[in-house]
Length: 584
Image (cartoon, rainbow, N blue to C red):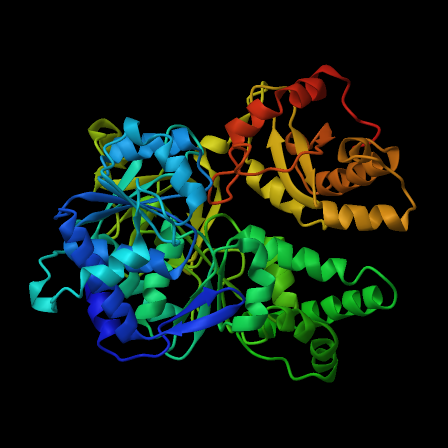
């Protein structure tokens, strides 16, 4: 069970177990301090009347107190319901009602206000605030820990079993109303114990926890990290990541593709001027020539590679703190072009694949079994097969128990005991798994041709001026694309061209900008089948975000929401003549 992790780490007398951010400083937290904080909070929760199977929600950015609350609940046999901080008050109310949560932890006065505005529509009895705050409708977490006294609680007192529910994690809602995924202690523990054998985490390493702990990947991997002896630094503000990387200097980086895309974009932005641009392009050519060595985990020994490393590769690593040895990507497809860019600067990203329903890891690349472009080999305790229509099917001890209070949806999620992932993929002759698209994302043109949008979008995002791309065209005569610029790079490009503009809306409509993106689309079209070629495009001034509901809280695109949000632009693309002159 997950409680075994608590007893393992608190019995090790480790210092530091965590790094807690206090202002601009990172303060170490030892295992005895963590143990004391958890036991005190457990006593406070017992005083609230919390018992086994009670649901307790956590609405907070990543921080030390998140983990304290999580373990206090798990040790009591309660069920943790994590909630993204980017959700609206109405969305939070739905999750609280649906789960029947009795207590909620919130991080700050801002989130307290959000919860109090909808609390009468929920079953919440107590609100606990992590930040010091004076509010008669809430309990202060530091005060609760200090005043409760330490609960006398040993491993023998822990009445938690593998089949007990550990958490209900609500899906991010890319396709509709969020569903509560029920994961047991055994589900997550089985996943952790298996992927730890392969990834190479070692005691004494450090990592920054910045992906939302409300997401199953961040939470499961973090649990595996601390169990392995890795020191975790919790970062609550993603926009401070670059500063945290330099301060903590982590050995392990767990990111989503958008994070890795931004690192590449920043490197390219810093090499736009002569002579840096020439040196940068030369270094990438050197890296490509030595790609075979890097793919095997070897450090090339040629003089040219050593020089390129000194001039370029080492500078990029220095921006990440200079010590990262393990790069892991999950949450969405990394894309072959981006993966190869990292290989060409001497780094392998261990891309993995999984879903909330699988706790989450299904497959992952490792030091011993790595193939760029794949998501690695399935874990030893997970079985994977490909259905007749190409869908990836999974079974194993980490597959979920079902959806909370949704018996029919749970039944339809399985076929002959196999969980239907909803993803399209293939397995090569060596056992490496490839994920090519989401089954529900496939577009079918009015001519009956099926188009997988993700590979096309990945090719477009390979260009430094494209932050995001969304291919549309379902039930239409041809596919088209919405292009979302990487505005920092685009504005730098515009300054070089001496272009003037007053707003982003005016900026993206400039003829020079339009021609630049037409060229990008044309270059991608050259490698596509005739029925896949993009016949029109729109450059969008508005950025995708969780705030406007075009991204999920875990930063995945919400295709249906995007199509709805930009329906006017999509209608325009299909109402005007095809841009055959621009897009060859």
